[in-house]
Image 1: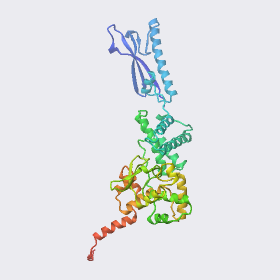
Image 2: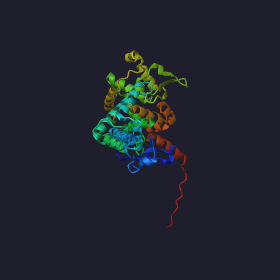
Image 3: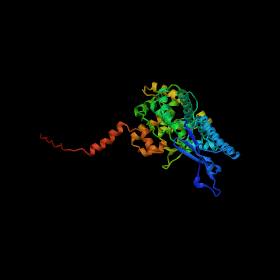
Image 4: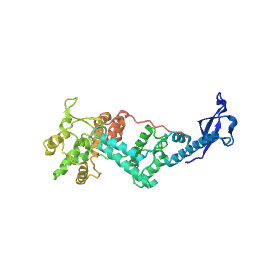
Length: 415
C-alpha cells in the first residue's frame, strides 16, 4: 500500500554553534511517523525562510544551499520509486533502508522451498528417507499449482503470504485437488515447515499460521482378525508368487515391521536377545528408532523357508521381497482368494501385529510400542486399537470381583 510522503526542512535553533549558525534538519513524515535527519548544512537563522524551507536571496551561497536541499528531496522520491518497484510498503523503516541502500531484496517462496528440498535430497540415507523427499516434492508442486490457480503466477514474495493465503491454499487442496481432511492437513503442515524456516531466518515479521488451526481426524485402522490370519496361513496357493507374498506379509504380521524395514533386513540383523533367544535388531527407516523384536515360531519358519532362496543370497537379504507396488497388487488377489472383504495392503500387517497379535493377547502396550519402534506411547495408541474381545476379558475379571451372591434388596420410592 502506497502512502503520501511529506518533506520539511527546518532549523534546530537549540543546537546553534559558537558562530551563531543553526543546523538545517530534514523531516520526513509518512502516515504520522517521522524521520529526522541532519542535512549537514548550517545557516544564519536570519537568512532562513521558515515558510518556504529555503535560504532567502539569490546569492551564490543561497543557490548552492537550496540546490543541496533540492537534491535531498530527489533522493527521497527516488527511494520511494524503489519501494514501489520492489512492491514494498511505503513506510519510514523501508524508506530509511532504501535511502541507505539497505533495501532488502525480495525473497520468493519457490526458491526457498526448492532449497529446502535440495538439502533433504543431499541427506537421504543419513537423516531422511526417500519418501520424505517425495512428500515435499509433491508439496512444492501443489503449492505452485495453487498459486497459478489463485494468483495466476507461479511464485510469490514471502512477505505477501498471509492468513488468507493459508486458508485459500487449504480450500484449494480440499476442493480442486479433492484431498481428504488428513491429506490436506499434511500438505499444509509441510508448507508450514517452510514458513517456520522463513521465520527462523527473520525473513518474515508475522506468522501467517498464527490464527490457523487444523485437526487431523482419527482414522479407523484396518487389521486382520485371528480367523483371517489363520485362513491366509492355511490357504494352499498354487502360484509361487502368491505364496511368497503371503509369507512375507505374515512375516510382517508377526514382527510389526513396515515394508521398507522388511526389505532392508539381512541375516546380520538377527542375534540373541536378553533371553538368549533369537531376536531381530533393526532401526526403522522412517524414524530411525530402534526396533527389537523377539522371533516367534511363525516368523522363524518363514526365515528358514527362504534362507537359501537365490534372491536372498544374491542381494544379501533376509527375505526375497518384491516391490511394494507388486506386493500390494498381489495382496488384493490373496484377499479375494481367501474371501477377506478388506482392502488388503502391506501396511495392514503392521496394524495386525499391534492389535490382533500383541495387544489382544495381553502384551503390554509399552512392549508393543518398543517393538514397533515408536518414540512415544501416543503413537502406539493411535495404531493399536484394543479389540472388543480384550475389553470383554478385562471386564470379566472386574465382574467376577464385584459379583454378589445375595440378591440386592429392593427399596420402594415414596412419592
